[in-house]
Structure formats: C-alpha cells, structure tokens
Amino acid sequence: MSSRSLRKLRGERKQEPLNHFADQEEEIERPLEPATTRKRRRNRANKAAAGNLPQRISEVDETDATSDKHLTEVSDDINLRLDSSPGENDQIETMQNIENEELEKENEELENESDVLRTSSQNKPKRKKKKKKNRNSTADDAQEVATDDIDSILQAIETPNGFHHQTRTVSAESRPLLYVEHRNLNPETELKRYFGVRAVLGDQRSKQRHRSLHRSTWLTTPKDTWPRYTKTGISMQLLETKGGAQYFTFEHNRDYQQVQFKFLDAVDSMDPNNILTLLRVNPHHIDSLLQLSDICRMQEDQEMARDLIEKALYCFESAFHPVFSLTNGNSRLDYRRAENRSFFLALYKHMIFLEKRGCPRTALEFCKLIRSLDPERDPLCALLIIDFLALRAREYAFLIRLYEEWEFHLNLSQLPNFAFSVPLAYYHLSQREDLSDTERCQKQERAKRLIQNALIVFPSVLMPLLDLCSVQADQAVLSHKYFGFDVQIRQPNALKQLVMLFIGRNWMLWKEPRVMSWLEENVKEVLRRVDANDPLVQESENK
Image 1: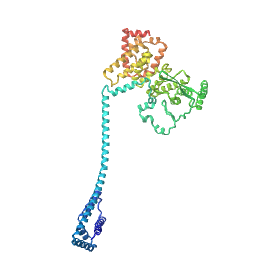
Image 2 (image 1 turned 180 degrees about the vertical axis):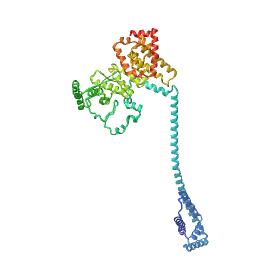
Image 3 (image 1 turned 45 degrees about the vertical axis):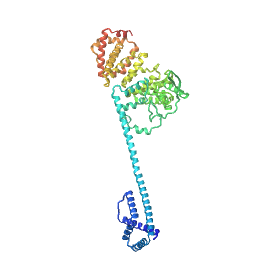
Image 4 (image 1 turned 135 degrees about the horizontal axis):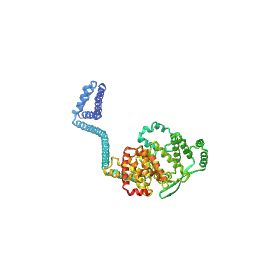
C-alpha cells in the first residue's frame, strides 16, 4: 500500500474519534476548562495517535461498526505488504519514522506556542503587580517623609526658641509699620471669625451666583442695589516719585466740575431734597453721597448712611491708578488738594462706622491707611484714635512697636492717649499664659513705670476717668491736692481737649475690675512719690 493511502487512512481515523468526542461533548454538558488543560489533552492525544497507530486503529474499529469490513481489508493489505518483501518494510518504517518526527515537531511547536501564550498571560498581571508595588512603595515613602516633616515641625514648635517660631516673628517684624493687609479690609472676615460663616453670610451664598457684574474691589463689597458703575469724570494721576514714595492726585473733568457747582448750590439752599434730586441724576457724585450720609446719620438711619459711604469708596477705588497701592504704605495723597479731601473723609467715616459695628480690627487697617496716605501732616489726626483701635482689636504688639519707633521723632509720650494706652498694652501682654516668668516680670515692671509716669505728667486724667467708670475714688486720693480740682482748671485748653477726647473714647477699656485694681495700686504709688518730692513731679509741673 502506498504512503499516500496510509496518510489518507490516518487522517480519516484521526477525524473519527474527534467527531465522536465532539458528539459526546454535545450530549453531556461539561463544565468549561482552562485553555491550558485543553491544549495539554490535545497534545497527549496527538502523541498517542502518532506513537501507537495500530492500537488506535483497532480502538476505532471496535467503536465504529459500519467500517469494520473496510478496516479488515486494509489491515490485511498492510500485513500482506509487510510480509511480502523486506525492502518495502524498510521503506514503510522510514516513512513512519519521518511522519512521526513531523508529528512530534508539530506537537513541539504547539507546546511552544502554548508556553508562549502562557508566559505572556502570566507576565501581564505580574507587571501590574509590580506597578502596584511601586505605587504602594512610593505612597508609603511619601507618607513616611510627610510624617518625618510633621515630627520635625512639631519638635521645632515645642522647643522654646525653635527655628519655625523665629522665622515667623522676623517676617512679621520685617514688614512696614503701616502695612495694610487686603483681607483685613473686609469686615466680613472679622465677623466670620467672631460669629461663624453661616451667621454672617446666611442666604447670601445663593444670591452671589445671580449677582450683577461689578468690579472686584478691596475697600468695599459691591451690592446688588447699586447702579452699574460708569465713568463719572473722576480719575487719578501720578504726579511724581520722590524718596521711595509715589505721589498721586484725583482729577475732575469738566462735566464733573459742573455737577460739583450744582452740589454747592444745593448745599447753600439748606434743603436736603435738592441734594437728593442731584444724586438721582448723578448717582456716583462723591460729595453728594457724603453729605446725604451725614443727613441719614443725624436722622439715625445708620444702615443707609453706611451704605452711601461704601458706595462713595467704591467709586473712588474704581478710579484708582494702576500703580496706586493700598498695602505697601508708599502711596501718597495731599489733603490740601480739594479733589483728594473727599477720599480722606470717606475713609474716616467708614472707619467710624466699622468701629461702631464691632469690627475694630478692620477699622484699625483703615486707620493705618489714612495715616499712610499723608504721614507728614496727618490731617485727620489718626494718632489720636489709632491707640484706641489697637487696644479694641487686641493688637498690643503693634501699639508697642508704633510707640517705640515713633517716640523719638514724634514725642508720643506727650499725648495723653499714648501715655495711658501703651502701659495698658504692656499690662495685657503680661497677663498672657504663654510667657515665661522673666518676660512676665519685665512687662509688668515696664507697665508700672509707664503708668506712673503718665499719672504724674497728666494728673487731670484720673478723676474724669473714674467718674465715667462709675468708680468712687479713695479718700486719700480725693483729699490730695495733686489730683484735685485745681489741676483741671490750670491745664491749657488744648491739653484739656486732648484729655477729653482720650477719656471719651477709651474709658470702656479701663472699666474692667483687674485693670481698675492695677490702676489703684499705681495711684497709691504715685501719691507716695509726690509726697517724697520725686524729681519727675517737679519736671512735669514745669512743662
């Protein structure tokens, strides 16, 4: 029998058991197996079919009843051929060996392909695992570094002279004395600190989304009820730069000057309705807004008066020069120019409204701004109120620094407000719990020395201050002539005015029981020094 017929016969015999097994798989529902196990079974079946061909043929003959006759004839032919001649047997064996080698090669190739697929399928999740490990390791390293940084920061804070604390104090002291922070110009920032965000904003969050378009400003927050800002005829010009300071000025165009003349006529008429009609036609006229605010304040309409002042500040800030800065303290405005006065007055009135509203920290920032605009002349006397705002805002360190830096060239100790407010700031600082014993003793001694000097230099302050605080003075104090009624009569009118301004503003700060007991101790010490003829007493009398 030829090799070609043998190949055909083997192909038919190989397909029959496969079909038979496929029929069995259709009849019996087997669970799905992995691809690797199925390939192994196929390889084993191919090897068994290639290596044990007669047994395979016999097994197929037993199972297949229809092809028994054909199989017997073929097998007889094969046996006759094998027995007929040894040359043909050798050829058949060689052919079988070649075919077996080819089948083995095919099986090896299939095994290699299955191994490649297996290794590729196994390598993919391994790469993911490696990435995950790397991510986890990097995350763990980042966490370790973060924890180390936090530990080092905490150690630096816990140490009394830590580097973190030192750099913080140096950066605060390196700023200019009249440095203004933008966030402190907004009163809502201070109110949120006192009462919380919900109590301050309320339903304003939802309203802000539907808010009309206004320019973002620092001095005030535009409101929905305000008309849209248009060019009103006010502009700011840079005049010169001298000594590290930039000098600016506001200017009015011709249209605004015509409105200004109409405003002066309305003021001369003594009728507020004329100002109101002028403001309806020109809603951004500054002097009309300021004058109408004073009228509303006298009529006890504080909300409307404050709203008009804020609108005036919004108009001014919309006309600022691009170089003009509110924070660095180097921008200057001359109060003697009529166009600049309205800006000073608007800032001062807004500061007073903020203090009455309960925002002393914000009012202190506006006071520093007023002082920095014209520090040489100080036209609105910001020095007479800055100590009160600093004590109200509990900015004791700022008040002490201001006194130490400006005492040499301004003689602040000759003003009654600084003479009494600075020792009070030292006293409040000495009551802090985070101070060491030596620092507390130093501040207490400093406060005692300064308050005693203030009582010796300004003896006319004590009795009116005790009267406003509803405190009955000691009999030794009432009977002593140094604090008697004659001292108030002999003082000059200018000094009397300064004393009354100080007492009228600051008397609430001295009403606390601890402060009053501390004042009483120092008053008794002053009486002892007066009776002992202290040289400072005679020097103050001569002054």
